[in-house]
Image (cartoon, rainbow, N blue to C red; front, side, top):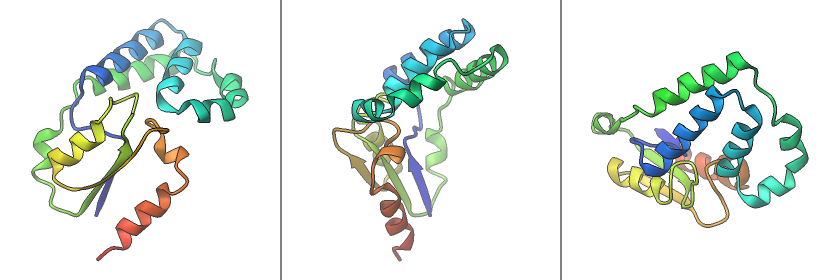
Length: 149
């Protein structure tokens, strides 16, 4: 079995804009703005409020070399298109993510499940990209899928 969470098979306008902005911030060496922008897309407002102090404590983390490496890895994402691979995978698959994923775009997880033709669970309003960190029942849903015959 395979589980795909908060991922994509191809970029859309939302994800391409996010990745491009993050590359520019990393290349400019602006770790603070990069961290602020990323977390505002990755986490829900409630989660950000709850862990505000922790996020602020680490928002400047990232030296020049790490930021450049991040830019290289993220630039590779701009050229990611795995649609052709989906047809070659023939195992039970679960796509799980958030309806309002601010990193990949609204409805991105439903679109991936439709392309893949597989089971999906999409969390409603209240979560974003890091639904795997925020949803209390996330691991339970994974285990249930893995235990199904």
